Length: 367
Image (cartoon, rainbow, N blue to C red; front, side):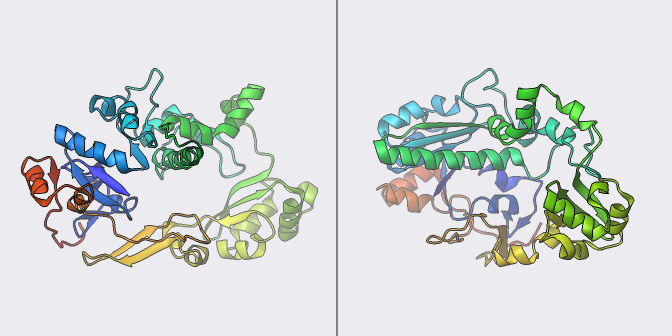
Protein backbone atom coordinates (compact mmCIF):
# COMPACT_ATOMS: atom_id res chain seq x y z
CA UNK A 1 0.00 0.00 0.00
CA UNK A 2 1.40 3.38 -1.03
CA UNK A 3 0.77 6.46 1.08
CA UNK A 4 1.24 9.68 -0.92
CA UNK A 5 2.24 12.58 1.33
CA UNK A 6 3.02 16.26 0.72
CA UNK A 7 6.58 17.49 1.34
CA UNK A 8 5.64 18.55 4.86
CA UNK A 9 4.18 15.13 5.66
CA UNK A 10 0.83 13.82 6.80
CA UNK A 11 -0.68 16.00 9.55
CA UNK A 12 -0.62 13.07 11.97
CA UNK A 13 3.19 13.11 11.87
CA UNK A 14 3.28 16.44 13.69
CA UNK A 15 0.16 16.33 15.87
CA UNK A 16 0.93 18.04 19.20
CA UNK A 17 -1.59 15.81 20.99
CA UNK A 18 0.64 12.72 20.86
CA UNK A 19 4.25 12.07 21.94
CA UNK A 20 7.10 11.00 19.68
CA UNK A 21 9.53 8.11 19.87
CA UNK A 22 12.70 8.23 17.83
CA UNK A 23 11.31 11.30 16.13
CA UNK A 24 8.19 9.36 15.04
CA UNK A 25 4.70 10.38 16.15
CA UNK A 26 2.87 7.55 17.91
CA UNK A 27 -0.32 8.92 16.32
CA UNK A 28 1.10 8.36 12.84
CA UNK A 29 2.54 4.98 13.72
CA UNK A 30 -0.80 3.40 14.66
CA UNK A 31 -2.64 3.44 11.29
CA UNK A 32 0.36 3.50 8.94
CA UNK A 33 2.12 0.17 9.41
CA UNK A 34 2.57 -1.95 6.29
CA UNK A 35 2.54 1.17 4.08
CA UNK A 36 5.13 2.81 1.85
CA UNK A 37 5.59 6.58 1.96
CA UNK A 38 6.01 8.54 -1.27
CA UNK A 39 6.37 12.33 -1.19
CA UNK A 40 4.77 14.17 -4.11
CA UNK A 41 4.18 17.89 -4.43
CA UNK A 42 0.76 18.01 -6.09
CA UNK A 43 1.06 21.78 -6.47
CA UNK A 44 3.51 21.09 -9.30
CA UNK A 45 2.24 19.58 -12.56
CA UNK A 46 4.97 16.92 -12.62
CA UNK A 47 3.81 15.71 -9.21
CA UNK A 48 0.27 15.38 -10.56
CA UNK A 49 1.61 13.49 -13.57
CA UNK A 50 3.40 10.98 -11.34
CA UNK A 51 0.22 10.37 -9.32
CA UNK A 52 -1.65 9.72 -12.56
CA UNK A 53 0.95 7.11 -13.45
CA UNK A 54 0.39 5.47 -10.07
CA UNK A 55 -3.38 5.54 -10.60
CA UNK A 56 -2.97 3.70 -13.90
CA UNK A 57 -1.35 0.79 -12.07
CA UNK A 58 -3.36 0.73 -8.83
CA UNK A 59 -6.54 -1.14 -7.95
CA UNK A 60 -7.76 1.40 -5.41
CA UNK A 61 -7.25 5.09 -4.67
CA UNK A 62 -8.41 6.57 -1.36
CA UNK A 63 -8.49 10.32 -0.74
CA UNK A 64 -9.91 12.51 2.00
CA UNK A 65 -9.58 16.03 0.63
CA UNK A 66 -12.52 18.38 0.86
CA UNK A 67 -14.86 17.76 -2.12
CA UNK A 68 -13.63 19.49 -5.26
CA UNK A 69 -9.92 19.58 -4.41
CA UNK A 70 -8.98 16.47 -6.38
CA UNK A 71 -11.01 17.69 -9.38
CA UNK A 72 -9.15 21.02 -9.35
CA UNK A 73 -5.86 19.12 -9.38
CA UNK A 74 -6.99 17.10 -12.38
CA UNK A 75 -7.10 13.98 -10.19
CA UNK A 76 -10.86 13.54 -9.77
CA UNK A 77 -12.67 10.29 -10.45
CA UNK A 78 -13.78 11.26 -13.95
CA UNK A 79 -10.20 12.06 -15.00
CA UNK A 80 -8.56 9.01 -13.45
CA UNK A 81 -11.23 6.53 -14.49
CA UNK A 82 -10.42 7.41 -18.12
CA UNK A 83 -6.80 6.42 -17.47
CA UNK A 84 -7.80 3.30 -15.53
CA UNK A 85 -11.43 2.15 -16.00
CA UNK A 86 -10.86 -0.60 -13.40
CA UNK A 87 -9.91 1.91 -10.68
CA UNK A 88 -11.94 1.88 -7.46
CA UNK A 89 -11.85 5.51 -6.31
CA UNK A 90 -12.89 6.06 -2.68
CA UNK A 91 -13.48 9.48 -1.15
CA UNK A 92 -13.96 10.15 2.56
CA UNK A 93 -15.17 13.60 3.58
CA UNK A 94 -17.14 15.25 6.33
CA UNK A 95 -20.48 15.60 4.56
CA UNK A 96 -20.05 13.71 1.29
CA UNK A 97 -19.57 14.64 -2.35
CA UNK A 98 -23.12 16.00 -2.73
CA UNK A 99 -25.54 17.96 -0.56
CA UNK A 100 -25.64 21.48 0.90
CA UNK A 101 -22.74 20.94 3.36
CA UNK A 102 -20.05 19.64 0.98
CA UNK A 103 -17.83 22.71 1.45
CA UNK A 104 -17.83 22.52 5.24
CA UNK A 105 -14.65 21.25 6.91
CA UNK A 106 -15.09 18.45 9.41
CA UNK A 107 -13.27 16.52 12.11
CA UNK A 108 -14.34 13.81 14.55
CA UNK A 109 -16.10 16.22 16.92
CA UNK A 110 -18.01 17.88 14.05
CA UNK A 111 -19.25 14.57 12.67
CA UNK A 112 -20.35 13.46 16.13
CA UNK A 113 -22.39 16.64 16.49
CA UNK A 114 -23.95 16.58 13.00
CA UNK A 115 -24.79 12.87 12.79
CA UNK A 116 -26.97 12.69 15.89
CA UNK A 117 -24.27 10.60 17.58
CA UNK A 118 -23.38 13.19 20.22
CA UNK A 119 -27.00 13.96 21.12
CA UNK A 120 -27.93 10.29 21.26
CA UNK A 121 -25.07 9.40 23.55
CA UNK A 122 -25.95 12.20 25.95
CA UNK A 123 -29.51 10.86 26.26
CA UNK A 124 -29.39 7.12 25.68
CA UNK A 125 -30.45 5.40 28.90
CA UNK A 126 -28.84 2.15 29.93
CA UNK A 127 -30.42 1.58 33.31
CA UNK A 128 -29.32 2.41 36.82
CA UNK A 129 -26.02 4.28 37.31
CA UNK A 130 -25.65 4.94 33.60
CA UNK A 131 -28.16 7.75 33.38
CA UNK A 132 -27.30 10.23 30.59
CA UNK A 133 -25.74 13.55 31.50
CA UNK A 134 -28.11 15.39 29.12
CA UNK A 135 -25.14 17.61 28.28
CA UNK A 136 -23.72 16.61 24.88
CA UNK A 137 -20.20 15.24 25.13
CA UNK A 138 -17.68 14.25 22.47
CA UNK A 139 -17.05 10.54 22.91
CA UNK A 140 -13.41 9.48 23.11
CA UNK A 141 -11.83 7.12 20.61
CA UNK A 142 -12.48 9.27 17.52
CA UNK A 143 -15.48 7.33 16.17
CA UNK A 144 -15.89 10.02 13.51
CA UNK A 145 -12.56 8.88 12.06
CA UNK A 146 -12.54 5.14 12.74
CA UNK A 147 -16.10 4.30 11.71
CA UNK A 148 -16.08 6.09 8.32
CA UNK A 149 -12.74 4.41 7.58
CA UNK A 150 -14.31 1.03 8.28
CA UNK A 151 -17.28 1.86 6.05
CA UNK A 152 -14.85 2.89 3.32
CA UNK A 153 -12.98 -0.42 3.57
CA UNK A 154 -16.24 -2.34 3.30
CA UNK A 155 -17.25 -0.27 0.28
CA UNK A 156 -13.92 -0.93 -1.41
CA UNK A 157 -14.27 -4.68 -0.93
CA UNK A 158 -17.77 -4.62 -2.42
CA UNK A 159 -16.58 -2.49 -5.36
CA UNK A 160 -13.72 -4.89 -6.04
CA UNK A 161 -16.16 -7.79 -6.18
CA UNK A 162 -18.26 -5.78 -8.64
CA UNK A 163 -15.14 -5.11 -10.70
CA UNK A 164 -14.28 -8.81 -10.70
CA UNK A 165 -17.68 -9.48 -12.24
CA UNK A 166 -17.87 -6.55 -14.67
CA UNK A 167 -14.31 -5.33 -15.20
CA UNK A 168 -15.36 -1.79 -14.22
CA UNK A 169 -14.31 0.29 -11.23
CA UNK A 170 -16.49 2.88 -9.55
CA UNK A 171 -16.61 5.87 -7.20
CA UNK A 172 -17.23 5.38 -3.48
CA UNK A 173 -18.56 8.34 -1.48
CA UNK A 174 -18.26 8.02 2.31
CA UNK A 175 -19.29 10.89 4.58
CA UNK A 176 -18.33 10.93 8.26
CA UNK A 177 -21.86 12.02 9.16
CA UNK A 178 -23.50 9.29 7.07
CA UNK A 179 -21.37 6.55 8.61
CA UNK A 180 -22.03 7.66 12.19
CA UNK A 181 -25.74 8.10 11.48
CA UNK A 182 -25.87 4.54 10.14
CA UNK A 183 -24.35 3.17 13.33
CA UNK A 184 -27.12 4.74 15.44
CA UNK A 185 -29.79 3.65 12.99
CA UNK A 186 -31.45 1.30 15.48
CA UNK A 187 -31.96 4.10 18.00
CA UNK A 188 -33.33 6.41 15.29
CA UNK A 189 -35.69 3.67 14.17
CA UNK A 190 -37.68 4.15 17.38
CA UNK A 191 -38.24 7.77 16.50
CA UNK A 192 -38.93 7.07 12.82
CA UNK A 193 -41.70 4.62 13.65
CA UNK A 194 -43.02 5.86 17.01
CA UNK A 195 -42.17 9.55 17.03
CA UNK A 196 -40.89 9.26 20.60
CA UNK A 197 -37.97 11.68 21.05
CA UNK A 198 -34.79 10.65 22.82
CA UNK A 199 -35.30 13.49 25.31
CA UNK A 200 -38.47 11.89 26.61
CA UNK A 201 -36.99 8.42 26.92
CA UNK A 202 -33.92 9.77 28.70
CA UNK A 203 -36.04 11.07 31.58
CA UNK A 204 -37.93 7.85 32.18
CA UNK A 205 -37.07 5.80 35.27
CA UNK A 206 -35.13 2.65 34.43
CA UNK A 207 -37.15 -0.56 34.62
CA UNK A 208 -34.68 -3.24 33.60
CA UNK A 209 -31.47 -4.21 35.38
CA UNK A 210 -29.31 -2.90 32.57
CA UNK A 211 -26.46 -0.54 33.23
CA UNK A 212 -23.35 0.20 35.26
CA UNK A 213 -23.12 -0.73 38.93
CA UNK A 214 -20.61 0.20 41.59
CA UNK A 215 -18.36 -2.61 42.83
CA UNK A 216 -15.88 -2.66 45.70
CA UNK A 217 -13.00 -1.58 43.46
CA UNK A 218 -14.68 0.08 40.51
CA UNK A 219 -17.66 -0.66 38.28
CA UNK A 220 -19.28 -3.50 36.38
CA UNK A 221 -21.60 -3.35 33.39
CA UNK A 222 -24.45 -5.82 33.09
CA UNK A 223 -27.64 -6.62 31.21
CA UNK A 224 -30.30 -8.71 32.94
CA UNK A 225 -33.30 -8.51 30.63
CA UNK A 226 -33.92 -12.07 29.47
CA UNK A 227 -35.52 -14.57 31.83
CA UNK A 228 -32.38 -16.65 32.23
CA UNK A 229 -30.26 -13.59 33.01
CA UNK A 230 -32.75 -12.34 35.60
CA UNK A 231 -32.84 -15.78 37.24
CA UNK A 232 -29.02 -15.95 37.46
CA UNK A 233 -28.72 -12.48 38.96
CA UNK A 234 -31.63 -12.91 41.38
CA UNK A 235 -30.18 -16.20 42.63
CA UNK A 236 -26.73 -14.62 43.15
CA UNK A 237 -28.03 -11.70 45.21
CA UNK A 238 -30.71 -13.80 47.03
CA UNK A 239 -33.72 -11.91 45.72
CA UNK A 240 -36.94 -13.29 44.27
CA UNK A 241 -37.04 -12.86 40.49
CA UNK A 242 -40.25 -10.87 40.56
CA UNK A 243 -38.74 -8.50 43.14
CA UNK A 244 -35.50 -7.81 41.29
CA UNK A 245 -35.35 -4.13 40.32
CA UNK A 246 -32.55 -1.86 39.10
CA UNK A 247 -32.29 -0.18 42.52
CA UNK A 248 -33.07 -3.13 44.80
CA UNK A 249 -31.01 -2.66 48.02
CA UNK A 250 -29.80 -6.27 48.04
CA UNK A 251 -28.50 -5.92 44.50
CA UNK A 252 -26.65 -2.69 45.27
CA UNK A 253 -25.18 -4.09 48.50
CA UNK A 254 -24.10 -7.34 46.85
CA UNK A 255 -22.25 -5.46 44.13
CA UNK A 256 -20.55 -3.00 46.49
CA UNK A 257 -19.34 -5.80 48.75
CA UNK A 258 -17.40 -7.55 45.96
CA UNK A 259 -14.55 -6.74 43.64
CA UNK A 260 -15.04 -6.65 39.89
CA UNK A 261 -13.16 -9.93 39.54
CA UNK A 262 -15.30 -11.63 42.18
CA UNK A 263 -18.49 -10.44 40.48
CA UNK A 264 -17.26 -11.56 37.07
CA UNK A 265 -16.22 -14.98 38.38
CA UNK A 266 -19.67 -15.45 39.86
CA UNK A 267 -21.77 -14.25 36.92
CA UNK A 268 -19.89 -13.47 33.69
CA UNK A 269 -20.51 -16.93 32.20
CA UNK A 270 -24.15 -17.01 33.29
CA UNK A 271 -25.30 -13.63 31.99
CA UNK A 272 -23.96 -10.63 30.06
CA UNK A 273 -21.67 -8.98 32.62
CA UNK A 274 -18.20 -7.49 32.54
CA UNK A 275 -15.91 -5.38 34.70
CA UNK A 276 -15.33 -1.83 33.49
CA UNK A 277 -11.59 -2.08 32.95
CA UNK A 278 -8.98 0.64 32.60
CA UNK A 279 -6.52 1.09 29.74
CA UNK A 280 -3.77 -0.42 31.91
CA UNK A 281 -5.91 -3.47 32.60
CA UNK A 282 -7.07 -3.76 28.99
CA UNK A 283 -3.65 -4.20 27.40
CA UNK A 284 -2.79 -7.05 29.80
CA UNK A 285 -6.22 -8.68 29.87
CA UNK A 286 -5.85 -12.46 29.33
CA UNK A 287 -8.32 -12.49 26.44
CA UNK A 288 -6.62 -9.53 24.74
CA UNK A 289 -3.24 -11.23 25.09
CA UNK A 290 -4.52 -14.63 23.93
CA UNK A 291 -6.06 -13.12 20.80
CA UNK A 292 -2.94 -11.13 19.94
CA UNK A 293 -4.66 -7.76 20.07
CA UNK A 294 -1.49 -5.92 21.10
CA UNK A 295 1.31 -5.95 18.54
CA UNK A 296 4.89 -5.62 19.78
CA UNK A 297 7.89 -5.53 17.45
CA UNK A 298 11.36 -3.98 17.63
CA UNK A 299 11.55 -0.74 15.66
CA UNK A 300 14.75 0.01 13.69
CA UNK A 301 14.97 3.39 15.46
CA UNK A 302 15.64 1.63 18.76
CA UNK A 303 12.32 1.41 20.57
CA UNK A 304 9.54 -1.18 20.79
CA UNK A 305 6.66 -0.61 18.40
CA UNK A 306 3.40 -1.29 20.23
CA UNK A 307 -0.05 -0.93 18.69
CA UNK A 308 -3.54 -2.37 18.66
CA UNK A 309 -4.00 -5.11 16.09
CA UNK A 310 -6.63 -5.15 13.34
CA UNK A 311 -9.24 -7.16 15.22
CA UNK A 312 -10.08 -9.58 12.39
CA UNK A 313 -8.92 -13.18 12.33
CA UNK A 314 -8.22 -15.00 9.05
CA UNK A 315 -7.60 -18.74 8.84
CA UNK A 316 -5.52 -18.59 5.66
CA UNK A 317 -4.04 -15.07 5.70
CA UNK A 318 -3.41 -14.07 9.31
CA UNK A 319 -2.87 -10.38 10.00
CA UNK A 320 0.73 -9.35 10.59
CA UNK A 321 2.93 -6.28 10.77
CA UNK A 322 5.41 -6.88 8.00
CA UNK A 323 6.88 -3.38 7.90
CA UNK A 324 7.08 -0.50 10.32
CA UNK A 325 5.22 2.79 9.71
CA UNK A 326 7.36 4.55 7.09
CA UNK A 327 9.50 7.61 7.59
CA UNK A 328 8.52 10.53 5.39
CA UNK A 329 9.47 9.79 1.78
CA UNK A 330 11.11 6.50 2.73
CA UNK A 331 9.90 4.73 -0.41
CA UNK A 332 9.80 7.59 -2.92
CA UNK A 333 12.79 6.37 -4.93
CA UNK A 334 11.70 2.74 -4.75
CA UNK A 335 8.19 3.44 -6.08
CA UNK A 336 9.34 5.85 -8.79
CA UNK A 337 11.76 3.24 -10.08
CA UNK A 338 8.84 0.80 -10.22
CA UNK A 339 7.16 3.32 -12.53
CA UNK A 340 10.20 3.15 -14.81
CA UNK A 341 11.63 6.54 -13.83
CA UNK A 342 15.44 6.64 -14.07
CA UNK A 343 17.84 7.61 -11.31
CA UNK A 344 18.82 10.77 -13.19
CA UNK A 345 15.19 11.82 -13.61
CA UNK A 346 14.51 11.12 -9.93
CA UNK A 347 17.39 13.38 -8.94
CA UNK A 348 16.05 16.05 -11.27
CA UNK A 349 12.55 15.76 -9.77
CA UNK A 350 14.07 16.14 -6.31
CA UNK A 351 15.96 19.26 -7.37
CA UNK A 352 12.73 20.71 -8.76
CA UNK A 353 11.00 19.91 -5.42
CA UNK A 354 8.45 17.70 -7.15
CA UNK A 355 9.42 14.80 -4.87
CA UNK A 356 11.32 14.30 -1.64
CA UNK A 357 13.36 11.37 -0.44
CA UNK A 358 13.73 10.06 3.07
CA UNK A 359 15.55 12.54 5.31
CA UNK A 360 18.41 11.50 7.56
CA UNK A 361 17.02 9.83 10.68
CA UNK A 362 17.64 11.28 14.10
CA UNK A 363 17.64 8.66 16.82
CA UNK A 364 16.15 10.87 19.47
CA UNK A 365 14.27 9.61 22.51
CA UNK A 366 10.71 10.16 23.55
CA UNK A 367 9.39 13.69 23.61
